[in-house]
Every structure is written in structure tokens, then in C-alpha cells.
Length: 336
Image 1 (tube, helix red, strand yellow):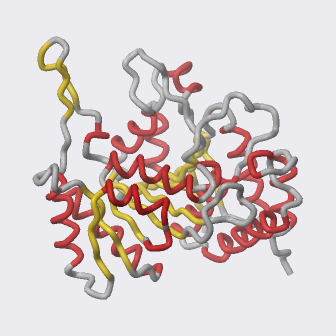
Image 2 (cartoon, rainbow, N blue to C red):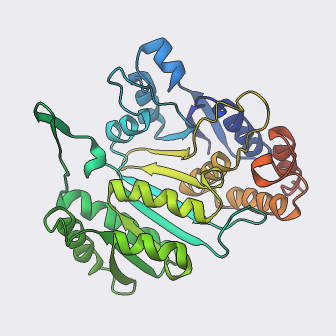
Image 3 (cartoon, rainbow, N blue to C red):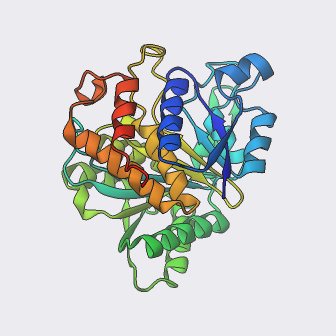
């Protein structure tokens, strides 16, 4: 079985980190064929938009994508390519596992969280208009359908991954209808999973408690805007966006991505850390059931980080992208 995956190399350091990821996956024997598609700056030059139809069609056809970091055009009325991607393909699940890794500076010890972010609604959907000169209204949307499907996805994930406790995060005390609908959908779906412990918490309380003791949380379920903000907070607990993978998943397609920026200041210098993209690609392998290959890659990454001899500059080392990548490849198990 081989998998055809749409590759969005990304801007800035994107081609370097996705290239390194492809090297590791090839060395690990991942049965992937890549179909390169334009996005971000390249797509702006060729098509006049950062997420062109040809790229969306490629992902629809292959149902799998791997994405490097993309730039967002400033001004000109262009929306984020990432938002456009999620909305066009209805990638309603934002999945962000966050774990402490060996030898990562600034990491909070023992972090092991999974965040689920509803990707399609809430204020982040960007529905706004100027009602009178100088007065803008932004619309916060919340439907039962969106709340129910993200809740069910989270509960099913927990059931198969052995996760035991989920917190639904909200501001229902301020927005009793919109956030209340999200919380209500969580409780309705949760009734079908009595063996999973279910709690709810205000987003403000969660923001206070996470930096104090993240070990008290297991799985977090959030709406779009708060999910965007708090997923980055959790990434900070684990050492930053450069070491955290991510995925956007829908019924008919899934795109796995680095959640960090394009780092144009080091682009093309061979200094970039490919870890976030590589771990995202490992999530892709798990998603299609290639668990053995994914485990081999994970163990090789952990070995290199724990050894500490081939770390990139952001991790406190002096290795470049190529040296770090080769060290991971060298730690992969050899075929008998």
C-alpha cells in the first residue's frame, strides 16, 4: 500500500524543513509518493492568491497533505492561507498534541496534553462588517452540528488512545448562547462515553492553571479562537512552536502541518529545525495506520534529542538542518 500525499513546501524555511522530513520518511521506509502543490508566496506569484484551487483539488484528490509554514500577505484583502485551507476543505478538527521532549530548553517538565480546536466557527471564522462608519461588528457563530462533531472526534480519539479525562473550555458565563451551545453539545455527546471523565472549565481559569501545573490536564476541547491562543500557550510549555506538531482533519481530507512561522531571517542558511514538520508527518503515518514506521521515527528523534550531540541552534546546539536530519536517520533501525 502506497499513499499519495500533497506536499505544500511552504515559505521561508519551509522547503528546508519539509525536505528534511521527506529524507527521514524515505529512510524509514514510509510508503509515500509526494505530489507537490503551490501555496503561500509561490502561489501568490503564480495565481494571485495564497491557496489556489489547484492545490485544494490536489488535497481533495489525495485526501492527505503535509504543509510547511506559509506566509500571510499583508493587506490587499487576502485572508490567511491556513484559514482558507481549513474552510474550503471543512477541516473541522484542529489537533495539537503537546509533549515535553528531551533536551528542549525552556520546556516545562512532564507536559503531555492533547488539544482539540473546533476549526470552522467562532470569532476566528472572520465574519465581520462595518455597520456604521467607525463601528465594526464581528459575528461569533456556534452551531450544534459543529460542537457535536468535534466533541465526538475528541471522545473517539480518547477511546482509542487511552486518554481518560477531558475538559471542555468555554466562556458560557459571558456567552450563554454561543459558548453554552458548545458546552451543551459536549455534554450531549459525552453521555455516550461514561467511562471517560468529563469536566468543563472557563478559558480564563484554564489560562491561569496551565502554566502553574499542566500535569492536571489530559485532553482539552476548545472553540476556534481560544483554541488558537491556548494551543500556542501549551506549545510554550513544551519549549515552543518549533517542537510541536499539528493537524487539521475533516471527513474527507487531513492536512498535517508545522505550526511555527516561516523564519525568513534564517531561510536558506541550513539552520532550521525540521522537528515540528517531522513530528507532524509522523502523525500522518499514524493516521493512515503506519504505526510501526511512526514508532521507529519517534524513537530515533528521542534518541537524538536525549544524546544532545546533534541539536540545532534553537535547541541549544550547533548542528545545522542536514546534520540533525542525518543523526535521526542514523538512529533508525536497520532492515534485517
